[in-house]
Amino acid sequence: MRLFYDPEISGDFHFLNEQESKHCSKVLRLGNGDEIYLTDGNGNLFRTEIIEIHQKKTVLKILETIPDYGKREYSIHIAIAPTKNSDRTEWFIEKSTEIGIDIITPIICKNSERKVIKSDRLNRVAESAMKQSYKSYHPVIDEQINFDKFIMQDFGEAQKFIAHCEEHNDKIYLGNLLKKEGSYLILIGPEGDFNADEIQMAKDAGFIPVSLGSSRLRTETAGVVACDIVSVINQL
Image (cartoon, rainbow, N blue to C red; front, side):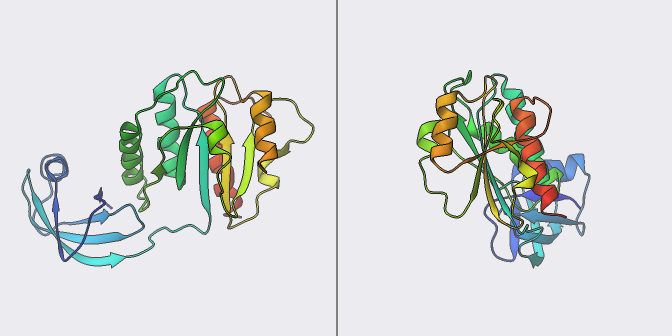
């Protein structure tokens, strides 16, 4: 499957932009009559035929629309502190998108070393990972928000967890707490971890302290592991 992305797809024909058209004609060396797939990032997959190949504007005819392609029976929202090295945050975005994630919220904590992120860059990373892994859903990447403001929001029926590194007897392995086919929100702290006040604030707001295993993980690794635990539990 050759998958391309455009958030605005409608009608019986679609025009690829110059970048995607060049990729079709010069890199993939496709021609008239070849089939490719499109997604709008909202779960719709479109099977299309190239009717006019051009490196600046390629014309596609939509042959079939497949709604809810690859739809999961659960949703996952990870709120994670940006890492000092932006490449590590991008790695988390890439891998969690490949596994399957719905919402990513960058949270700024007391121990955060990076206070500003570029959401446009993160969205490009997510787009590339979505196409590479044949996903039809583009994760929502929120604007950054302070931790204390974030946790006071209403998250509906989501199962809420905070993964932290402090030694506490009340921490249980995440996989032992998840209810299948649910909605999940997991907090992942910065390199210096959440501080004691943040952990208590989260608990007061209904977040359950959890462990992600016996290893001490980097921020971005913890985010991917949390995402994978949710995925595995929901496939059992």
